[in-house]
Image 1 (cartoon, rainbow, N blue to C red):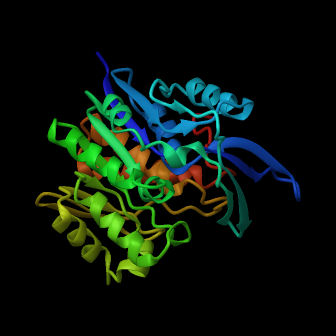
Image 2: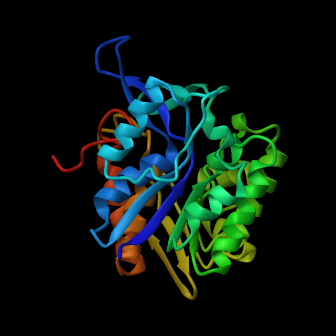
Image 3: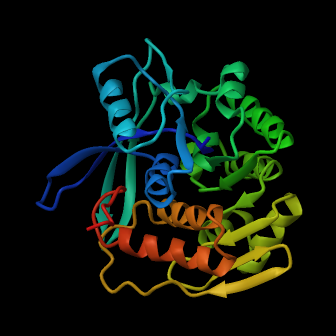
Length: 301
């Protein structure tokens, strides 16, 4: 029976530059789904990759589910809500660096963690559960607390929890609320995959080592700090290493750079690669992704 990697979050309609001026291409993407898409390509047939979210019952939601399933990602635990639909975002680029405009007020994913029983069913028997800070940020009402409690129960039953803080202050009521929620998620996580630039900005970390130690103090055994084009720092127990990422001469679009790194790293790590090899596999995948437009890049060609 296949082992299960279960990712939790929001998939959205993506409008990305199509090459010509003021021309956009529609697709589907979102940070945790991007990681699911790349992880499905990186993992062997002995792993099932599944996505937990909520969508509407409209045509666009149907198209999204068909897209997710066509990527080989399971949707059996995706909730359907008649009074909601899916969110949308548009990517704007300036010399390869991206910014986003969002429309997600009626997104069904904001209510995906309302039902503890649905989460328990989705997480039952999973080897690995994956979420991000954006997953936490978009949840309405008590959803955040419900999700963290479900993750803690699953972890107690043997699942490993992987967390990318993915700090996006625009999604939060305050920076303080964001940081508090991120550290609450870190406290139920085994692996944390932060980006140092964000951590320095909002937690005041002086260097990647400070980021590593803060998340290890929260309870994570394995921390890998992404650091843009600079050296990454990874620590797993007593093993500590610095890894320089590949240099990319022509950065086209940094969308999903971190998401694809996470997928490359996890795919290698879950299949038994050593820490350095797994970090390098993540960096190599991200280097290919940033040389093309959009979040989901066909790296097989």
